[in-house]
Amino acid sequence: MEIAIIACGCFWGPEIKFSKLEGVLKTEVGYCGGNNEKTSYEEVCSGTTNHAEVVRITFDPKMITYENILNFFFDIHDPTTLNAQGPDIGTQYRSEIFYINEKQKIIADKVLSEKNIKFSGKIVTKISPVKNYCTAENYHQKYLEKRF
Image: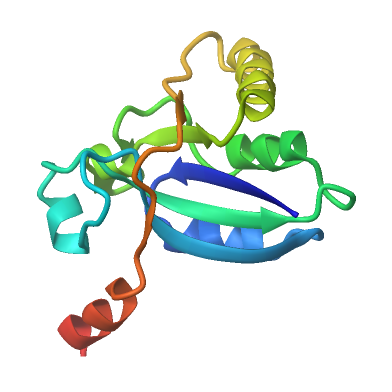
């Protein structure tokens, strides 16, 4: 099994989309790329932690490749908008690929270069090493409590 961590706006929609791909065994929402090992939804929304909302994808590379996951990533969001996806605006909604090893970095660079041709050089997606990943385990309950 392998792991992919991607940021493409609010994590709920992408998590559902990735969970439906054949070969994806598990998805999890969280935060990555920030200054602290742990954070909360409120801290991330303040814009001070530098975390992005991410989906952590556990997949079987015999059924779906990392490259296929990244191609799907570029298909399901707008990689040309800086720190925003649709109505969601803020650094936590940026487009970013977090790589776990050098092999993933090489694949991410390749896919981004290919997609950037299609998007006339307008892609703002960053490629970064995984830094301070943490789950958003308490977010869903807090969200429900505020909403209902």
